[in-house]
Image (cartoon, rainbow, N blue to C red):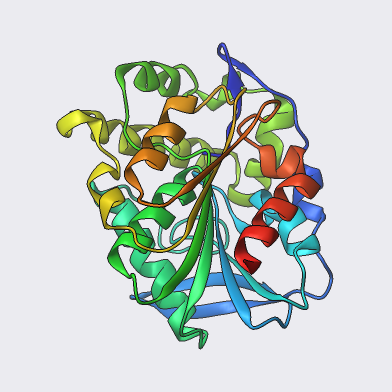
Length: 279
């Protein structure tokens, strides 16, 4: 998820800067996919297509400004999207059935197919990381490589306490609320966030709290897991679990990285991703 917390307090980072740090050479539009109109942005002219998958209630512009701006446009064609019910992919209003990650995975893959990409890689942050893992397991013939960071493999009771502690967005700092309120409006943002808390809490009732545990052994594409060792939202144990259960995967730990490592350390992250994708 895109929210950063530490002991119940919000970590400070400039989402607004991330929203504006994307290139003016970005084409945008909507594609009708699986009954909804999905918003996307596309930049670059490289042969290697890459889809960026945002975190909880996140969007292309709030979550991936530095990637749209700075990933190598000669080597990659970079596509960002807003999952259904998020950002500019509204209507419909977002809902959270138990299979919402699987639904997002199908939407993501079908969007790329609609855009004309036969095979592509996935870069997924937080919720988008879980979506990427599921997509790689379910659509192996379409996925080239995946990079995931800040992703959960399961939901624990400790996670539930953390989510419940930040349900009330009125307790967030103005600085944290404003960018998302700009996207959704104050009322819809609060409603969507509370609905997400309920949606993610469902997984704690599944065996072992699984979000995507059963999908991990099915992933056959090259996989890079990046994790910030100071991530206050997702413990490093999740990254180790994913790495252990995705055959042949690679784990890269960033000692100073937190949940938003791709924004805070954009140059380092982009180089890690580019080098892996170009191998």
